[in-house]
Length: 483
Image (tube, rainbow, N blue to C red):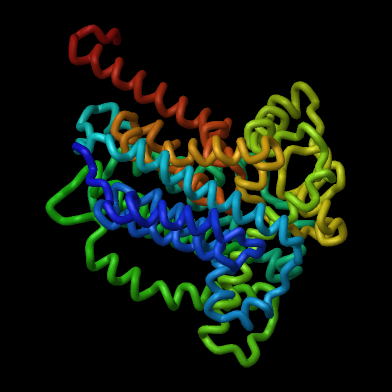
């Protein structure tokens, strides 16, 4: 089935914005170039209106891109005094122009390759298998959810207690868990086990119960100052329900209009809460701020991730060569896994140390150390974004290739799910969350779930148990079982 092409966006809107961007010659983040970037983001979001559930990942990716890389521009256009009140570094006009070029180019390339890959995707129903293999996986994973969620809550409770006693900033420098390592490892398997269970496409009641529990556990991350875990938990619920409507459609929608209306009603209160949470976690008082000002300051501060790209361009000669930050998750897996550290004695640098920043492959650590060593030593950081990593490693060509890859993955996501079994689908669920968070995180973060040794070990074990059980049942049914 060929998906209809949005006429205005493709034939008029995108070319018009491209011309505007080229001829604006913008040398600041809020000039004609910034306006063109906001316009392209809007067109990307509007292009999802025809089949929003099939394009859910592309839709959320663009919203994330806006929040972290363009929101400050919008705040400056609507409330310049609020944007100016949020501290920002100042760059030369040429650096700001380069930032705009990289942002617009990344969005444009992602859109082009998304459209090319999604346009000819066959829209076929995925029927959940009634095969005993699927049933056994569902049964085993459901049983494993109980101990992993209990331990996960215990780990979160310990972090909450630490932050309550010593403060939010201290968590990044001096927190060490008092729980046994094996229990922490098991606790960390909760999302992987849950995703595997959901990948078997259980019935409606069981699905809603598990999604509600997952959202509640994600909300606990707020207790130790983390917003991203909570938001990504809510985002996964939306993505999963949309995917169920695409792959396993029923007469009653999974992501119904009633749920969408409820979500829309809660959106503004949620944004206000997240804005206020910035002050709450740092024990600051909210003084003389209207709701609009509070939201504006929140968007401007989140949109400050764009300055990471400015720092990268400005200080590129201070980064150590050949670190390949864009491959950081893969290199980290090869160097820091259990076998590498215990058998081969691979070096593990202390937290917030200069050695970790300069000798490692984590871009966020290197950036924080180069920009503000004192802030880095106290546990502070600026985060990362995939454009900065690709640019520092491979220049503009790297940004083009990386954005094209993202476009292909976003466009083929549901198609890949249709062809996969429960284990592959579970990995894809975890990878999808990392992919949509890439504007604020690592380029290859979406590969990280595929490199998790504990997850791989558990999945292989479950697979072997199910296969062995099936063979045993087969021998019994054929009268070949030896007593």
